[in-house]
Length: 202
Image (cartoon, rainbow, N blue to C red):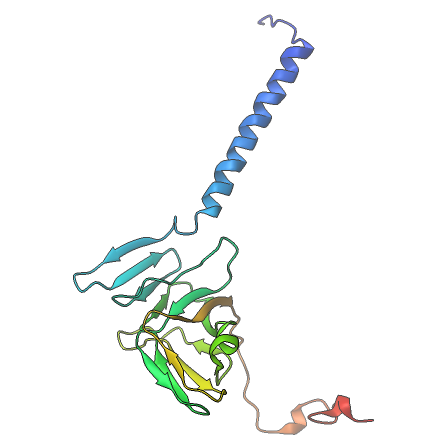
């Protein structure tokens, strides 16, 4: 049996202070890692100038000459993407704009959705006709670049420059349920809500 010297109050307080300091230091390291948005990204540039961003859950191909992409702040939800071409959109017409961006996800529980940048309708009178684009998981080949169908609702011609930010990718989780196909309405519940717009009826 070994003899231990009694621990004084000062020593005990110093022990807890040291342990708390180590804990706080560890929290600071974790916070710093989370704040570094591109820490888990590995960038490779091929001879043609195009770039692949390799991430833990997928890859994003960025065409040559496109620089202003990615998350712009620590708390950004949308991954900014740019036009890969310069074109003019006359009033009351729409055009399909190619971004050249290709997304390949390894995690099959998330998908990429595409939204127009919120400033585009205000500054250039442009909206995306289908509101939200859904990128299927198998839409990831060499020719499967993301395109935005933009409509000019203004009275003047709108110009999109190559490299200009026009959209955002938002990655969302989803479920794919197993569905049974039926052809007889009798299998459904008899009660109903009264059809489309039923809650507006008095």
